Length: 368
Image 1: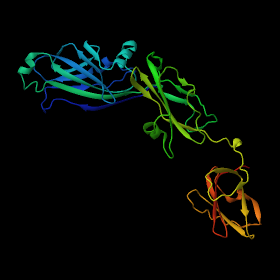
Image 2: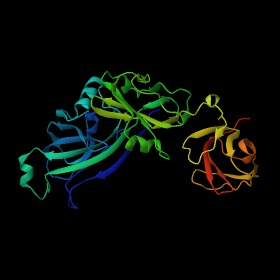
Image 3: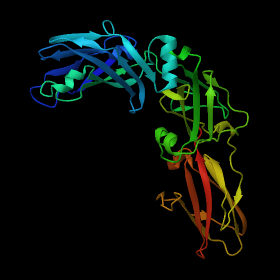
Image 4: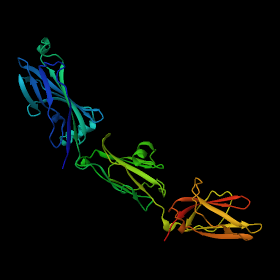
């Protein structure tokens, strides 16, 4: 069911309280809005005699860009209340300032579903009008109105689903065209794909981030993953959006959807036993347990260790000291009972009796 949101936001009558002529626009209640439908108003005249007048129409987009201008043939405005529409007035001139909208209306008989504002100006076509300033106090009388024609089938994204976790690094993209304008041969699509920064929304990323891929002039309603584009990164979030263009004019813009590619845990290999170093920038995968080697060169001592967050915050786990013997000591620390967060990063911090500190960064994976 098509929904119409129509709001009368301003009616300008004469600038004086005893105005002799006023104009009131009628609400549009049709299904498809054409530029000629803007000619629909009630004009009230308190003038003693009939005068010759004409209407000028200006139709603008939601952003204020003028789309079309119309002018009726002169007609007699009689005293009293007069109802005028395209049924009893003839359009004398019509000019499209937006070529894309003009071609669409000429092909379909109506303008694309969108938000518009239009104004009607009543002008005097009789030179005698201006000889009676008390009865025609201004050059023109104007009324304006806003309408919003909502497309029954707007532009929808289809797949990947919003906030989906997908298992491929080279996804294809699909969307549903806006209808009925989707059948127009001049309709094309622009596809945009961006990478999100940390804690960034998809809408913000589309507005602010440099697109990692953008394609214009698409006529199909899908996009096979571009062969020239590198594989998408795991554990990275992406946003995508599609815009529909009629010629060079944006007609519809989809919502912004996001998706991510989680790490395939079946491909995560448990870390080997790692020799502790004072400086080690590598990050190891610790699947349920942490394996490391410490080389003791002196008298056997106990080894103290803690686990911290990446920022150095100690988790206060109350871990028991590790007993050392001379030479290499291999340790396996069971992490399953420490309530660490799955797929989070931590640091193993080992302190010797000489207050030497060794660190090992690891990413924890929990498996049943």
